[in-house]
Image (cartoon, rainbow, N blue to C red; front, side, top):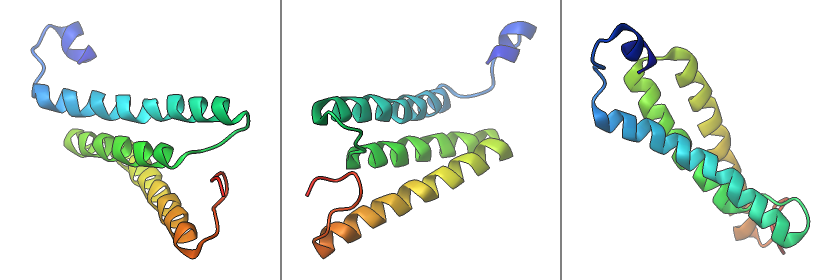
Length: 107
């Protein structure tokens, strides 16, 4: 987008890819608000499950955009992060099924 503004050429990226890319960033960034509010309410640092779901959803949207842009640095970063978010969600759900709360989860 910046390059197209500088050289005066119209951007070739369809509008919906901008929505996906910015949407992913918005969802991803919202997780910090969720974590901050949860920590303030608990008066201690907590990472709610919704933090990991927002991380996963925002990361997947950003990954789609990265694949569209064919950006290997962005792709690798989002793949790595998404794998970590998925693993955290799996650990949380496994702990809940087993009856023991995971770290940062209320008993």
